[in-house]
Length: 433
Image 1 (cartoon, rainbow, N blue to C red):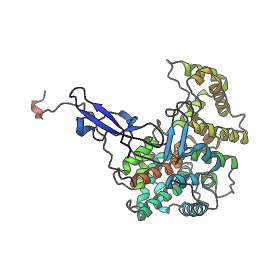
Image 2 (image 1 turned 180 degrees about the vertical axis):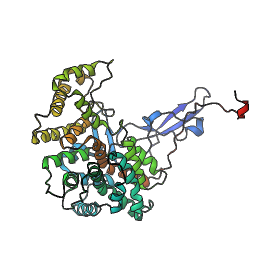
Image 3 (image 1 turned 30 degrees about the horizontal axis):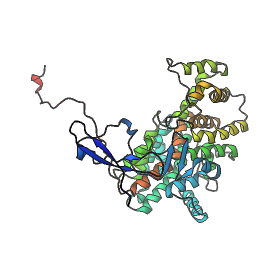
């Protein structure tokens, strides 16, 4: 048997040492297991944002930011985007393998059977103000699903866990589309289960009862790619939140609602919305050089949104995939006279040719193209993050399913460095002065 690799951590003040085991994953950097450091040396580890801390072992998704690699269950995102569809990716993320024809048929039927929502949920939705933000509605409604579907809340029962997962994947498009319909004052559209997952969502968003609706195949393809590319992304803020909430034993609907609340933050799920706000701020293609120069000026707070990525230091593999779908959609919609999209085209061209952007690897990322796609589809800005949540639901629930069978799983309880007042005694009010 091979000897376990260790790293020695020595306290120079006391001379005490701690042998920390090294954990090797399939891909990526080795990880030092510091669980015993508190007992051996009396220390905790300080890591704000947990940027250098592994919180779990996971087999769902792998990212290599330096090389521009994204794998779902070992499959390159490029292959899945070209050859798969969103529901098949859902099966892969949930169960770890691509489905056989029989498994695919069974899963597809199961999801379709759960696309409708309890009518009480729509009455619940009607209690919101007409100008309520769709993400606020999703946080409340997804959390409330546990009160409508309490027959699948035994988190210790694998069948219950799977049923809750399927319900979330199936009902999220319906709830998101209902939120949109409510805010614009149109009647809700029921799911049409003869349609595919994406086509069904588009008809619930844009169909009206007075007219037939046929989804545009180019639009369907662009949106399906978006869903695939956003399905999971390792231990990001919202996924970690789902795991942290789930570690307490809460039900999966509540855990996913916590993930939605986290995604709502502009530093996480609002990037594609920020792209459109930037394009609208530029407003005139003739002003692009001025804004590019502002972006290059380190003393100017203006930044071009949708360029570069915190994780992908070279290029965003998702952007490479979605770029063509974005161009195909704009061409199909004949958007040449739309200033917003013309600004986007010129910014993309500059970023791919200008030495300033090339040297700093500030290439257009997936948010740049997804923002343009959603805008071209006629989806309002306040729905952008809701559609992101719809795509990411399968990632959240797959990570939760994995966590539930992890023998190392324990309730999350980070430590802190206390910097408040030292111990002191209470004084009566009359003695304070």
